[in-house]
Image (cartoon, rainbow, N blue to C red):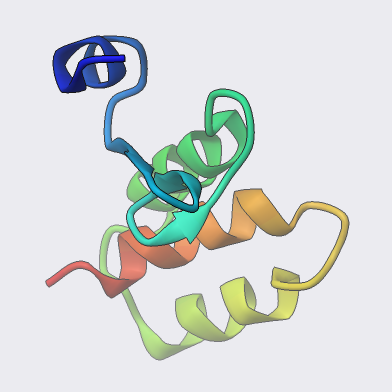
Amino acid sequence: MRIDEITDCCDDCVNEAIGLMFKGYPCTVDCGGHKAGYRYANFKMPNRTPADMQRVMGGIGTVHNSFWEGAKSYLEEV
């Protein structure tokens, strides 16, 4: 698969040697959970406060882990 095919089908996802990644976090299939979490944080947490990060970190490790990793990736951006 060529890099342009990867980027065409999956914004912000990178096919690395270890598998599909979204902004440094491993994901499966299409990174849908990560993308949804990123969009959620972009909409609901535009100020990136410490309380936002605390809320996101509470979700890491749950059944919705990929969603919260996506939200965390948004909050980690400068």
